Length: 174
Image 1 (tube, rainbow, N blue to C red):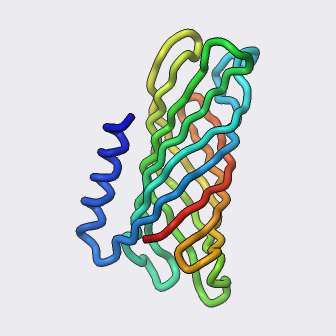
Image 2 (cartoon, helix red, strand yellow):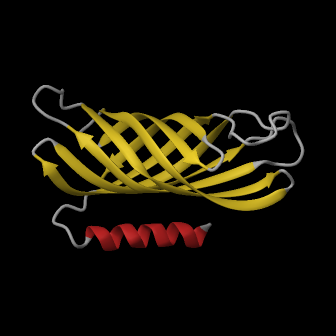
């Protein structure tokens, strides 16, 4: 896990070094996740999880839309009963389009997420596996201070064993 996080930070730093922007965002997230499709629902339940994310502002596509490259990792245990875990570690890589113009207050930044995730699974149907999926989502950041924000995010993870997540985040822009 530590190697994955170090690799993610390195990739984001490398990508940001080629731009004039490179503002780093760090987020701590929480999420409520719906039970994945294709699983035994007598053993699998919706659950709460936590995560960590990094993002870099890359460039303005227009005067009111900014592209942000981001990665995040979350942890969920979908086990309905105490006993064998049914754990999932989705690792997201993708982009976020942040919207802002004169008609939207400065403290509100709506966005759209899109990307892919790599899911490491343990204990589902008694085995360990990995899956690849696509992700689409939307949300908003609400700025408490110039660099500090809270957010709300909805994502739908699809292809293998679809599931959705809804949760808050707290972030800081460096």
